[in-house]
Length: 293
Image 1 (cartoon, rainbow, N blue to C red):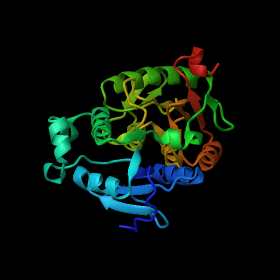
Image 2 (image 1 turned 45 degrees about the vertical axis):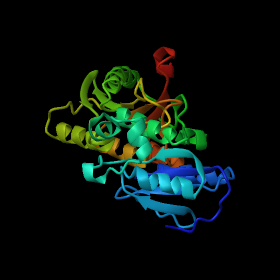
Image 3 (image 1 turned 135 degrees about the vertical axis):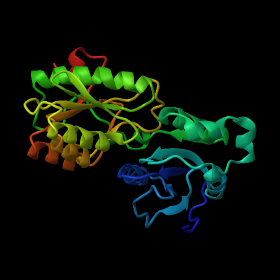
């Protein structure tokens, strides 16, 4: 654990899972004058945090997390980054307050859907007197906007696939299963499960290579925020790897929900999309034609 450093009241804690998002949030917080404390999730966080106060804790170790919050006088928490697995029973260390306030918490953490689990984690943290804020509140420039991000725009066929995949992604989200779906020629060929977006795109590539999916039609990936989702955690996100995996799967492009999805490493993502002839666009379910007409 790094030195406690600043002991001023009201510090921000960033719970850091895997991927780029925690780094973007931390830099945005620092640029805004914050001195954030990074809470690295053991076996999940994959960034170096030199120059930041930081500590590593196990998933489900709420007792250690509570001690960390008290040590650094944390009053706000951001949850960011990917988490690949759920804690085992032996890894869960609740505080006494958690056991008294939320008797079913442990069962939910181990067996609930992703959104259900995140809502429970938020409830547990706020039950300790802290406020949970969204990554987009700290780094609003990461939010997707309506329309194409790069030089390539979706065709009429692509827009039809966007509408079809959007319907599937919304239904999938209501079931608290995943956030993404792929439509090719108006046919839903894949929906996102526990393997995540990249795993789903790998599966699309395998199916296409095996002749189970049209070689002639390209198709579209759509990612939407779950209808019931607390937007303070696990907003849909794309990065350069999403673009490259969509290209490998033979897709024409990617559509994500404007205002409720995150675009990581935006300049590099747009460059990769333009170089590979893919569109990336923000869509809005509340606008005619999803905002693309």
